[in-house]
Image: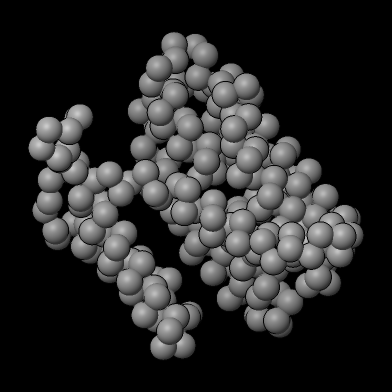
Length: 229
């Protein structure tokens, strides 16, 4: 739990933003807490609430929520080799979020095998409870916060994009990753400016992935002559 404390800086603001948006969309506090407890999927929760509030069919809402969460199919195999056998893993995988994955990916290999289940349990529980608490705060007190500090209402909707920006920025130290991310950003912006916002996300993601696998560049950016490595 101690090692997962820095994650709260990303979880709580985004959770407060979700709680506020959920309440504004007509969901009750109990429904908001149920979504954060059971779905617990960050970006997918924003999509879920928005689509339900706009009257989208339930099957389409569920399909789009699962589509965004399909990234977890990539996460799990990347840490599977470090997971000792335990009957608890199927339950603990509910706590596998973007941030917990990033922390586990770097930390699990450093731990003795017998400590890994307990470490993951502590990190996942802290992240999960902080997300639920932030959602509750946003649902109950979000309107009061934004009325008292209007600028907060302008900033909070950017909390989720900011969180993902923080996750991808370190990848710009690699030429190959920088090329792939640059292509994704450019296509997403182009689609947004031309009004093709719905197709922008999958198209940009697909083009970025294609660029990553087709373009072969040195993995790291070489230091300048006379500079430090």
